[in-house]
Image 1 (tube, rainbow, N blue to C red):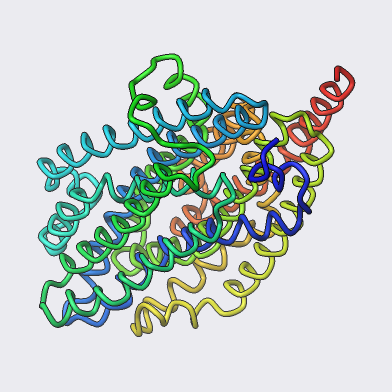
Image 2: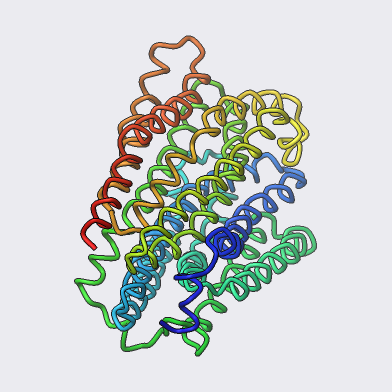
Length: 454
């Protein structure tokens, strides 16, 4: 075992998890910051409402980019660290090379498609006559940065998974500073509006992607990115795809649900409810995205020690991760439940929107207190190469529960907007119950069997 690998195998688990979670949390906060800063500045324009709506309509595309980045980034990083933990460095580097190639090719394809078909795509996502021009302008520039945006999320995952937390943190902070500086300059001083917000986001994330690639190709990286390992291998891509499909499906279903939920809110409650729903989703991302960063920090510990058959350390990582996530969700959910109006005023001062969004936020986040049980074990199954169980958890929560409830509840409830919001809350609580009864015991039983076989 090399000196660089030893902390993953022997270091203090809580200290390692805190250290490795920092860049993951920062990267997710940065992505959230891009969206929030854009909205804060755009909301101050003369036609701020339409600008906010235009950016909100592009949110499903953000989910799409994240989905592909997670498909090849998380799936590849988890499989690579399992191989590294078992001592097969060459295979781990081949997995990373194929993951990087897949991200680059996917980004190029999506850039071409979304740039050419920006207008019909935005119409499909709900843009009307008032918002279509701003939405298309934002989307065309945003699509040009597909490789940068996906690369930022995917490449950085390989940096974090190796324990290079200091480098990852520097990259993320550099991108955040660049975005904060560019946003007001391009939006106001250059009078570019939503186009300026898109350019600032793309350039900031491009900076992080370039830094990450330079690190992975350099001598400080445990897994070296080499051109020969980027030659496509069908078997490796299939392995990466199978493990990354769970987070991919999670992001895709979130994109679909965002579109359907916004459309339903618009149908049953008009523009005020639609904007209230958009702001509620934006605020819920303040919980989801840092939480994803914490899980990303735990992935390397789980994958490496699972591959090394250090099952006691796997158990300790699970316990520590659950404790941190329950604490984080508890604090953040309580803040949104108690003071929703204060957070909504960050984006708008319209009293009608604040009133509508406040109750939507409270209902939407009501089930978040117990949700870490679901999200943590979904990450655990992903990190330990058990893709079928991880995928099953996504399917139960989103496809079996949330989507059907989204259509069923408005048929049986008088308050249609409330029915739309309740669909997610009910699916969250029920899926946690299923996870607690089935998936949690199943994971520990498998660990017991593996230990007995050693």
